[in-house]
Amino acid sequence: MNQPDKRPFTFPKHFLWGAATAAHQVEGGNHNQWTVWELENAKVRAAQSEYQIEDYDSWSRVKDQAKNPSNYVSEALADHYNRYEEDFDLLGKMHMNAYRFSVEWARIEPQEGAWSPAAIQHYKDYLHSLRGRGIEPMVTLFHFSLPVWFMEKGGFEKRANVKYFVRFAEKIISELGVNVKYIITINEPEVYAMESYYYGNWPPATRSKYKFWRVMNNMALAHRQAAKAIHGMNRRYKVSIAKNSNFFYAGDNAWLSRASAAVYQYFQDDYVIKKYIKHCDFLGVNYYQSQRIYGYRIHNPTDKVSDVEWTLAPADIQHVLERLNNKYHKPMIVTENGLADNRDINRQWWITQTLIGMQKAMAGGVPLEGYLHWSLIDNFEWAYGKWPRFGLAEISYETGERTLRPSAKWFGRILKKIRGV
Ligand code: IFM
Image (cartoon, rainbow, N blue to C red; front, side, top):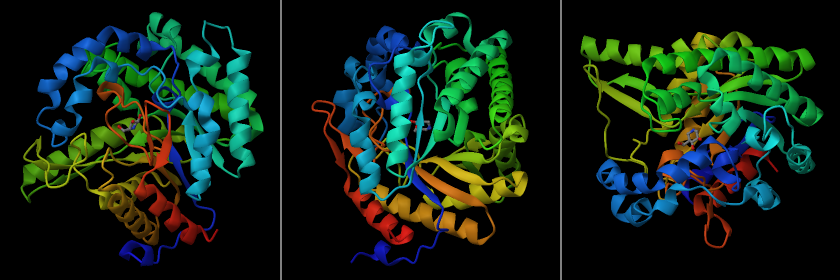
C-alpha cells in the first residue's frame, strides 16, 4: 500500500466531495460570445503561441497542439451535453457525492426573451440524473459564456443589462426548482473582468480600465439582485459566487514585500468580496496558486509548475481558507481546485497536500463544507484552448473516450475510505 493511503484523513460525514465543470468548457456545440470569438481568432492565437508560451516547461510537449488553430476552437469538445450520463458514472466511480456545473444561458435563452423548452428540459433531466445517483448538484449561472444577443447589447458593461441576467436567473431557478439547492451566480468575477476588459485576452478583448471597473460593479449588482430574487422564491437556496483566491506572501522580511503582499491580497479578495458577501449564504473559493512577492513584484519559485506554468503550492489552501474565515465568517466550499497536468505526475501529490491543508484549516475552526476538484473531465481552457489537461478523466478528442487518470482512481479509493462507503 502506498503512503498517502495510510493517512488518517477525517472529514465530517456530510462533507461534499466532488468535481466541477462549466458548460462552455465541456458541453460542445455551443453558440455564444466565445464560439464567435474563437473562430475569428484561432489563427492569430496559434501564430502567437510560439512567443507567448514557448518559455513554459511544457512547451516541447504541447507545441504541436498550441500551434494548431483547431486547438482554439471549442466545437464538439467532450460532447458532455449528450454524454453527461457517462460523466456522472465517473463521479460514482470516484465515490463522489457532489458536482458543480454551469447552465448555458445562450442555449436557454437563444434570443432575447425567447426561452428554449428543449434546453430547459435538458437541464431538468441532467439534474434528475444527478439526484437519482445521490449526487448534490451545485449550479453556476454565469461561468464566462454569454449569449451573443446579450453581448451585442453591451454585456455587463451596461448597468441597464443587469436585468437580463436577473431575469435569466429567476427563470432557470424556478424551472429547476427543488432539484437544486447550491447556486453560484457568478464564477470568478474579477477574472472575467480582467481577462475580457483589462488585458483583452478574452472576448470582447477590450483594454479599458473604465470598462473593467464598470463590468466589476455591474456584475456585483447582478449578483445582489439575482440573489435577492432567488431568496425571494425560496429562502432554502444557498447562494454564493465562486471567488478565485491566490495566496500572496512576502518572499523576504522587507517592509515593502510584506506591505505589497497585503495590498495584492486586499485588492484580489476583499475589494471584490465586500461587494458580494452580504448576499452570500456561503463563500465558494477557487484555489489554484500562491504568489511570492519581492518588493512590489511577483517572483514565484519555479521548482514545481503545472503545464500552464502555475507554481504548485497546494498546501497553501490552508492559509487562504483561514484568512477568508477570519474576515468573513461564512461557511465555505472549495468550488474549484486542481492543475493542468497532462502526464498526471503531480495530481495525486496535489490532492494529498490539499486534503492535508483543508484538514488543518478545519482543525483550526474553518467551517469548510465541501471540496470540488477542477475538473471532472478535460476541458476547453479558454484562451489556451484544448491542450491544457485539468481533468480527473482524460478525454480523447478523437474518439470521445473518457478514461480516469491514475490519480483519479487513487482519489476514488481515498474517498471510499474517508466517506466510509
Ligand atoms: O478552467 C478554469 C475555470 O473556468 C475557472 N477557474 C480556473 C480554471 C482553470 O484555469
